[in-house]
Length: 257
Length: 314
Image 1 (cartoon, rainbow over the protein chains, first blue to last red):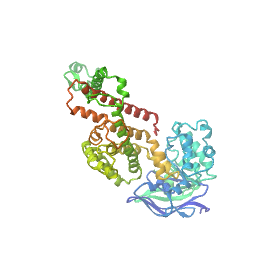
Image 2: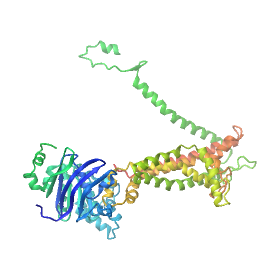
Image 3: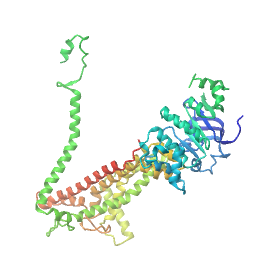
Image 4: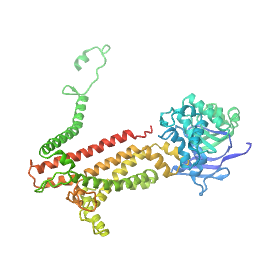
């Protein structure tokens, strides 16, 4: 099937909020230095699945799960694992840009500072902003508020902020859904560049985006009480040109969802 | 008007709206005017109070030098040898208000952090109403609590503490304004969008780091506003200091001896038998004006700080 070097894996993962099951028995491999897209209609657990990879769901009191989530072969949900250690290695970019109401510099420096970075902070900030392809636009105003940037710039700043803690995986939760087409293209371009060094998982509503940027695609849907089940997973080229499951075909050809 | 409109051919004239009238005036306009009157009552009252204060105080300053008033440290207007140095009263007010803030600021802010960031909903649902009950306790009760419970406790620790002292009043006043600090600060902190917290958590931040480095800076204007409101409340508080701090206008910041605040002095004269129109009587207006200037200054300061340090997140 897939040439194996998974960095993240789920095994029979089911996620519950209280009594509601929102992800059902998903087994999925996320490969190293590839872009994996998670697509599917609204309310099928895509974001919830993504948030299992950095334990962001821990913030929701009623959350619990069964099955396993493995990072480099280790179960993320072992009681001995500290969620903040995980989030330090697995970064996340959100649906809406959420820069802190601080300066551009302080936004990028925030992660390194709290994680006790003791190198040259200015260099790291510059490197991160350059990697996120926003350095040229902000280098003369690092002290101005991050909120003075446009939406697309804010999102690239948030990517820079994520890169600054030097993660190995970047999770992206519909990173372009609040951006215009030009800003979206800039982010997609950036994702392709970043995938040389990082493993990226992206949740998207936009199938064209999944087809354009991802190497692998997972299709989730809900059927009856089996919400958030994995219908098909494979190379994006194959999923979008020759889906094996008729439900996938129906979805990507726009017959539902 | 309505009859005229109705007599027109419907195809030519716009269909007349059946507006509700009140003695020939549109009802909406009447309502608008009535609401304006309601709002005007508070504005006019404020203007009236300030006018009376200024008028009476002006008469006071006709007899007593303004400079002596604001620089003198001896306050004996009810004695045979009269001195009108308001600083003795200001010192009492400042001392008790600052003492109260030393109690209320850390406790209030920390409980706000607890309720907003740490407490599970169930605990928060219990703690918050209980804290707010503190705000509903009559200040006379606090006053007696200070005099009959806190003061004996303090005197057990050190016999050198007077029966009336600023410390006891400060502690109890701090407890009284605590819910104001905690509740308003917590409201400001909870108004910080979840997305900012998530952004910080996603970088590996702990709860403490999220609270102190993201939530508090973003909520700072609301937190500072709560501090200043609480401070104004402490400056203007009357019962607790009258009962527990004494009526000895000592020009001192020593919290262990009897003092008198501006508010306590006003109570003393109002209760006493100084006839209307006498100089003694007019002193309370001068003191009240001083008090008013203090709280006005605090309110202006709070507006300035909120405008200046606002880390707006929208």
